[in-house]
Image (tube, rainbow, N blue to C red; front, side, top):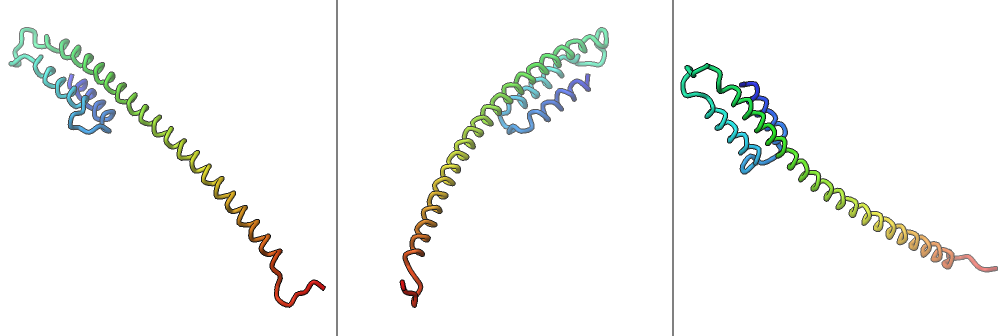
Length: 130
């Protein structure tokens, strides 16, 4: 049973580690799970059967594992939405960069034409048309 608690805790830490711990739904879920898990244990070591609470703890672990997976799915969906929004913004920046490159290329071509026309109109000193 301790392995189950450890596994659930490990999953929460690994998959929920990117979230800020203050106000994190997974952290709250883990705290709630730990409270309920400990509450199922009998107050003394001498319960009627000695292991009658273990089935309840296993069911509780399964329930909270399912809840944690649901929260992870929701958080993953939110991250994917943010990622897609960021991709759209990058696509917009890339398109703007292409436009800037196009405009700068046109400016460079125009400057080359101006230089070429200036060079053909001006002649070095001492040259004549004869």
